[in-house]
Image (cartoon, rainbow, N blue to C red; front, side, top):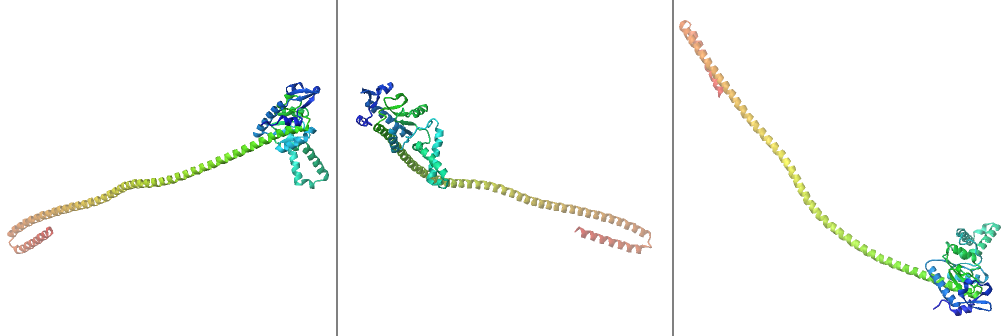
Length: 393
């Protein structure tokens, strides 16, 4: 189904062009016939071009772009404002400010000023100001509203503009072409179609014609926004589904991780027990070895001590035996010496007795006294022998 029918265009008077004397030769492909010195536009070409422009605008808005509606002449002011507000697009319908696109940084400041003044007015901040200053601010706000009220939400350059009359909006078209911004415009028989990227051949002076084409472009904007919102909703739903799936996957992963942790803990406990047993065995062996070594050392020390004591005892006993032997030998030597002494004494005594006997014999008169002495000496000798015998025993 076509976007617009030829009947609708005929009823709107979109086929009427300008007089032959005012035509632009570049518009020849778009003119159907000449009648009464008036050019009649080819509406079949209008249907095709309008469909192309419609698809361009729809795709532009669908991909997040913004289009600016421009119509400052008297016939287009109301319909441009109405259609732009219907589809939520930006518009300029009072006066095109020179440099609106090429000097957008300055215009951005003015738009910011407009938003600030509207905010101050809504908050009632001007009530406390002097009357003269308040009147000055209200005039400034009115002027900004008159020229920029349809673009106050514009934060960056638009991606396309729609122009109702490219001859009246010549400055806007030139600025857009300078910045390579696509232009969608209604071209009458007196216009240059080369200045427009998406030309729509139609009557740009009839209110019905302007309203019909503007409504179709506005519908393209509205449809593009609907598709964009639908895509956003689908993207959000897809994102939500992804999040749900990711949540489920995360839960599964968490469960697996929990199971893994549990199994890990159990395995850890088993391994701990095994390791404890192994370590216990190893420690037992080590302790046994250490205890054996310690016991060996202790036993060695004890055995050394015992051996030392035994050796000391044996040495003491040997020493005692040696001392006993030496004492016996000494005693024997003493006894022998005493015996030898006694024998010598006995021999001496014998010799003396013999001498005495001889003397007695010689001296007969002294016999009795000497005999008594001899007996005494003998008695003494016997006494000494008894003493020696007692000491030997």
